[in-house]
View 1 (cartoon, rainbow, N blue to C red):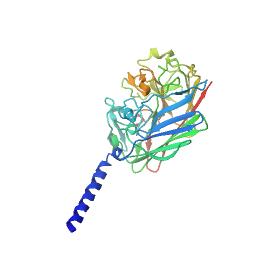
View 2 (tube, rainbow, N blue to C red):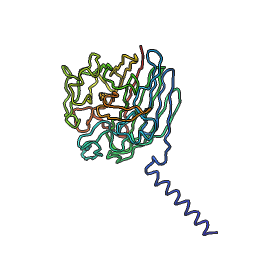
View 3 (cartoon, rainbow, N blue to C red):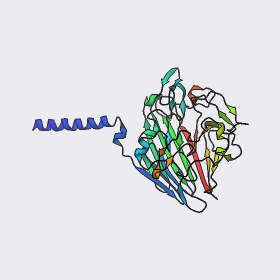
View 4 (tube, helix red, strand yellow):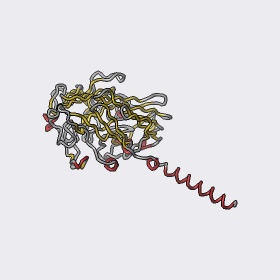
Length: 359
């Protein structure tokens, strides 16, 4: 009898140990699901894999609903994705030059997943982990949570991250990204990487969309898209969208397309500022973007090549436009850029507000 009890004890112990080992990669221990928020004519779906926004349905001027974000039909598409469709990216969005930075006298080396640089948090950034769902009200909001561990992709300290998508009224979507370092100072810069096409995700390119960017400076980059450290005026350049004009009107003057950080005018860090307005003449849809962040990356999906997406749509170059509000790229290596370092006891807060209309 004693031997049988001992054997049972050993079996239970081994079983628990296996579970614990599995949970080291805790994606094994979490279920991937999809979620939907609906209010009025606005309907948005998500998955807790990467806290991804997978679709957003909007009516056009005649009431016809279309999905206006690029993406995939299945979660497996997002698992194999190299485009970051609709994902929350971090711990540090955009690029870190040389995949390293110094903080308080210590050199940290991050994952060089973009040549010699780190892009969107590394090979397994926040877009490639499974988030838990803390709160979900289908006609109101959903909150995703992720616990980032010390040393993840080379970043220091444990960090608790929360992302809440909220429907406000019948035509607004708000996004609140929060993070708290628990034990070490660390850089934090989260971004939403949605690709928008207001005519419909499967309608071709966005070159005829009009955009108004309320920013009169950019942070120029080198050939690997790492900022030089300068902050320059857009006056007289193809980057000037202070008056609304078509995205494609001067894109031929650039090597590849738009992929640059704009310095948002008058940003304070506490209050929301209107950042961009995008409109599409055929559908009549218009999207306003407001944020509390100092920068916005304007990207015209220059690197898309025959990506098979939702409903077997084939996404090519310029199929979507990204407007990623953020801290400046590579701020950890440029003292003249706004700091992204957050200390234990402090909080990171990033807010985006989208307002959709049609006329």
